[in-house]
Image (cartoon, rainbow over all chains, first blue to last red; front, side, top):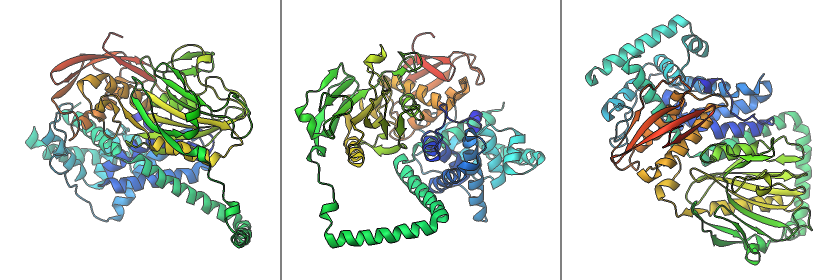
Length: 177
Length: 381
């Protein structure tokens, strides 16, 4: 996944901005909605964030030094857009777990239904900054240095947020150990 | 690495995969398309405000004149040959039913095995009198022409992925003598996703539109100088179905595009196990569709590779998104499990194995790593 943060599509992007955005949409839209969904609490908001990111990319196309950095641009736009959206709400939101019956009925790589739902709830209930650090570290596989750069905070702050998040998650998951 | 680290990775990828899979891609594209139009229009307004205002005034005057003189003379006549008639093809790749242009009823279809059928209105293949040269083709593409070597090749060892075929079409962009529109999205009658594009050619490009099998470029479908092709690529599972019409480039482009869109919107596929015909976001997987699941993992891994060598972990993560969906209501109805073979190393690019057990039947998948491609098969790599 880390390669998704730096690489473009396997085929060369079309030179024409609209065609390039179309190609990127085709390859990345679903994944980016997934990324945004980890940071905001509903898919509608996630899709708005991703739409904003694509529109911003289109407007900024002429200023991109390297068109192959477009995927990085999109990833960062989604992370920043999600963060702004949550910040505007002025309150840390808690996650409403999915209704019964929507969780997997079988084990997925060893995470049983209840444990999966509990862990998801715990991640979504983390303070915004901690949640962002967790998503960037475990979903995008970014290094501490990269996370610090993306979020505009110090590397030490990244360590602190990550450590607090893991502590919180461990406590929340003790019952499932 | 702790269990919590592993669980977090699996959870986040699985949840993100679910959310992404639930997206209505066609609606999303329509919305973005409109936003980009507005964005472009705003930029144009900023740059050419005065000119636009003048043009609008001219248009208003012209519109008033049209109104005064009646609209009928400005409206194109309805072309009766654009109406669609139902057609059902016989194919082991899935039996397509769709509306096709009525002019095909007077043309004898050319059929090649169970992968290609085409109708031609006229014998001329290049520039013909306007409206006299039309060709409709339905192809379940097995290969694409390797235009560099002059031979044909499979992008995948065991099937041409939807994305690979689309990429081969997209690669035509920038070719001298070829003009392409942007891609659009259409949904079939069964809500499968199709993408459409138009290609205008002022020179021949042999084998540009894919091949019904392995062989020489001459066996593949080509672009011809002086023609315009409206093409749709439908993701029918492990292979792409391409539907296109070719007309003289001077023909009515808008009507040609609308006709193709109507054809795709009417498309239904039967004859495959239902679980094999459902595409994300609703993939159901049955024991007899395990190879189909593998083809999808191969295809999505190729997309995720972004031109770089795949790792075992990347392929494993792609499978994870399907695993989550199999566990959802409407997913796999029986018991199932997945086990990585011994020595699994997420950072490795070496071949590996995994065992899928569906309803008590275990099948070892040998995951053969080949750069940005991967092939999953029951035999050793």
